[in-house]
Length: 488
Ligand SMILES: NC(=O)C1=CN([C@@H]2O[C@H](COP(=O)(O)OP(=O)(O)OC[C@H]3O[C@@H](n4cnc5c(N)ncnc54)[C@H](OP(=O)(O)O)[C@@H]3O)[C@@H](O)[C@H]2O)C=CC1
Ligand SMILES: O=C(O)CCC(=O)C(=O)O
Image (cartoon, rainbow, N blue to C red; front, side, top):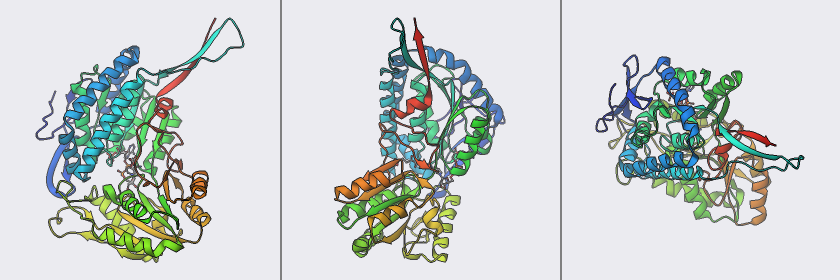
C-alpha cells in the first residue's frame, strides 16, 4: 500500500478504502498549462486489472450501503462537505495549477461542490415514491426506488471538482457504490476530492477512484458487466461510443456532451448587460465549458453599437497565469487544446470570417511556457462555416447579423447541438417566442448561457446529451430504478 502525500500532490488509486498504487506501479505526471515546466502532481497510470479490483470492491460494498437509511448516507455526505469546505483554498489552487481556470473561478467551483454535497445529503431524507390508487379496494399500491448497484462515473477536465461531485453525490445518496475515472488532465485535483470522501470515513469500497487513460480505464468501465449505470460528461465522439457499449450489454447510461450555444441580442435589449454576459459566458474559463457562448446573433439595429462595446471590453481582458492577481482569463488546458483552438481560428479565416480581435497564441510577458491564446472575435460568420457549427471549446466568439427574431431563432437552431441558449430582450413576446422555439435544454433570458444551478435539471437536446437530465431532482431518475409495489 502507498499513501498519498498532500504536499507533493502524489496520488495513487483509491480502492476499497485504501490508497493503492497501480498494479504496474506506473505514474502520470501533470504539468501546469500556464507553465509547462511546473509539475503539479502525479496520479497512477492504471490498467484494466486495477479497474477490475475497484469494481469488485464496489460490488461487495453495494449491498451494505444500499441497506443503510438515506439519512445515514446523508450524514456521510455532510461530513465530506465540511472537510472539503475546510480545504477549499488548497483544492482550488490545485485546480488552477492543474487545468488553468483562474483562482477565483476555481474557488467558486469548489464552493459549488460543497453546496452540491449538502443538497444531496438532504435528499436522503426526502420522499422517494408515490401511492397510486389500486383498482382493488383492499390493496395498497405504491412506488419505491432502488439503486442501480455499481455506477461508473467518467468525468472531464473542465470542472474537475463540480462534475465528479454532481455525479457521485446523487449516486451515493440513492444507495449506489461508485467507481470514478476522472479526466487525466484534472486527476490530481479530483484525487483531493476523493481524499475528502476518504477522510469522512465512508464504508470501504463505497467510493473508488481509478486514474489512467480514457481508452483503457474509461473503456473498461463501459464494458464491465458488473457496472450497472454509467454517467459521462465529455466529447460527443467518446460519449456515443460509451452509449453504444452500455446499450449492447443492457447497462443504463447518461451522456452530457457538447454545445454550440447562441446568445441572441434584440434591438430593445440592455446592451451593457448583453455585452458583459457575452464576455462572461463566452470567455470565462477560456471558453472551456459545454455551456459557453460561441455564436452571438445580433439584430441589425444594434449590431454596430454592440460590436463596438464588445471590442472595447475584450481589449481590456488580461490573460495570464490563473494564480496571478488580475488575470481574468487563464490558459487552455493543454497544448492539444490550444492547437485545436488555433486550428479553428485559422479555419474561420480561411472560410471568410473576419477577425476583429485576437486570433493568436500569446507567448510574451511570462506566458512563454504556457498555452495562452488571445480572446478572439470574428464577424462575417454564416451557418455554413465550421466555426459556426463545431464546438471549439476555446475563447472564440462569432458575430452573426440578422434582420428579425424569427431569423435569429432559425440561425440559433441551425446546429446539431442543443445544450444552452440565451436571449437579451425587454420584450415579453420575444422572450416567450424564444422559450417556445429555441431547441435547447437550458434557455436563459437576460442571463449568460453558462451557469448551471445545482438544484435544477441540466442536460441538452439534439446531439448534446442522451436526452437524460442530471442534477436537482432529475438525478433520481438516473441513479435509481422504480419498483412498483402491490400489497394485499
Ligand atoms: N461537454 C463537456 O463539458 C466537455 C466537452 N469536451 C469536448 O471534447 C473535446 C475533447 O476533450 P477531451 O478531454 O479529449 O474529451 P473526452 O471525451 O476524450 O474525455 C472525457 C472523459 O472521457 C475519458 N475517455 C477518453 N476516451 C475514452 C474512451 N475511449 N472510453 C471511455 N472514456 C474515455 C477521458 O479520459 P482521459 O482524460 O484519460 O482521456 C475523460 O475522463 C473538447 O475539445 C471539447 O470539445 C471536453 C470536455 C468536457
Ligand atoms: O455552465 C456550467 O456551470 C456547467 C458547464 C458544464 O457542465 C460543462 O462545461 O461540462
